[in-house]
Every structure is written in C-alpha cells, then in structure tokens.
Length: 52
Image 1 (cartoon, helix red, strand yellow):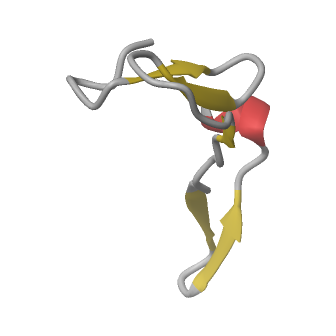
Image 2: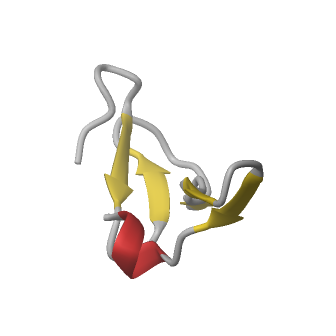
C-alpha cells in the first residue's frame, strides 16, 4: 500500500513499512484501537478481528 507520496511502502500483513526511493530501515506499523461503549459510561477496546 502506498502512502500518498511520502516515499514509503507499507505492508499491512507483516506490519512494517520501508522506503521506496532510498536506503533505510524498515519500521514497525502500529495499530490504533477502536472502543465500544458498554453501559452509559464505560468504554472498552475492541479486539482487532472485531474492529475490522
């Protein structure tokens, strides 16, 4: 997956990114968390397979 002209390629399955046009290190791709409401005030993080 390209990143909109930033010169890096992201591999979401392996969760890393690497530069396309220059030599450089691979970097880890981190996942954000999604939350769902439980009750009126409590929020809890969703599992990754549910959040997608």
